[in-house]
Structure formats: structure tokens, C-alpha cells
Image (cartoon, rainbow, N blue to C red; front, side):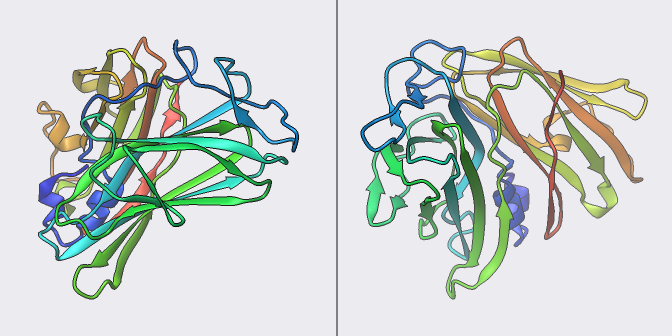
Length: 298
């Protein structure tokens, strides 16, 4: 959601934070469950009982997708975004985790400094790293770039990971915290899902979303706006390249929408034959932003 319209609002934070003017394409060598050439983390036992990376056995693997990352400044340095990811190992044993980060065009995220402690993540890939039982791994990046950078991330480990991600927007000159917003880390294997929409044109309220195709093959995602009776009022087919990201505000994304000035309650249904999508949503009005649910349709 990096709609420049909102970024210039001074409460871009919300916009960026939400990171929904999102949407783009392409990236590295990865795939989620059901795809070939998966580097898997299995709950195998080493001498110290830890979980380690091995082969192609994807049993007991947990993958979490963060559909939006925001770094740097989108308003010529007046404010800056930092993204922070906290990974907690609650599996009951030491385990190894891996992380991959991509630009919104799908290329490895190598134009932002990402750090783990005193170490720097190179070419958008965190090498397999052990996290002790009950331990925490912190990944952070951005904040000083002269230009804004958007992207998405994938965290992979054995079952038993808690992943929290959030954006901090700070005043550029003084580094005073302006806003902090969560970015949900969720499933990257959805094929059909729904996002509620509330729209009030007179108040500038709308819902923004970010969608990622996590697979190594292109996929078409059908998006339909439904009214309170379940009727389709707007639709669009989105062809998404491998590992691509797409973002936008609902009102900007669907040219057919003719929103009036009264409050409207709708929902957006996304569907595909490919079970390879991750998504997040936010309702935004001025400086206010609220996380909205993304619900899988069985």
C-alpha cells in the first residue's frame, strides 16, 4: 500500500506501515509446501537435540510469510521507517531457522541493511541460524535510507515458532517515534480468502491490502468486491509472477467501483487454483490504521 497519495499525508506511516500500496513480482529459489525444490527444515535430532536443516523432507516444517516490509524514507527524509521482526522459539528444543527477504520486484533484498545482532544479512538471505529453546532472534533494518524500499519476507523453521513483525515510523531529524504498527506474519499457502472492507469516501476511509505469490510459478488471482447481499460489484484478474507481491487500496485497485459518500460495508474475495498466497489488510483513515482480518475460505 504504498500509495504516494497516503505517503504524502504525513501519516504515511500508516500507509507504509500497512505497507499496502504493495504489489509486485519475482525472486529467489524458494517454494512453499507442495512445491518442488524446497529446502526443508525437519525436526531431526543432532547431538544436542537441536533442529537442523536437511534435504527435501518437508515434514514438520513451519513457514511464515510477512507480506509487507517497509524501510527508509518515502517523503524525502522527513520521516523514516524501520521494520523489526522478533522470532521466538517455543518448540521445546533448540532449532535452526532460515529467512529470505525480497524487494517488491521479487529480487533479493540487498539494497537495505538488515541486521541480526552485530551481523549483517547479505543478499536478502539469513543463513541457517540456531535459536536456543525459549530463545529470541531479532532481525531489523531500515530507518536511514534516503529513499523508501518495500519488500516481503519468509521465515522458515521447525514447528514451534512465534513470529512478530512491526514497523516503526520516526521523525527524520529528531528520530521521535510517530507510529508503530504490526505486520501480520501468516500462512503462505492460501488459495481462497476474504478481506472485509469498510469504505467512507467523505472521511477518506478505505481498506488496503498486500498479496504475495510465494510459489516458483506464475498464478492468476481473481479478486471480487462483494456487497452486503453477496453480489459482485467489481472484479479483476491479477496475473502474479513467481514470488511476486501486489498491493493497493481497494478503491484504487478496482476501476469499476462507484463508491458514494455514505459508509459502505463490503468484502473482497480472492481465489486461485494455486494454494500459494499470503496476504495482510489494513483499514486506513488519515492517521488512523487498523489491522483487518484475512480469513481462509475452506
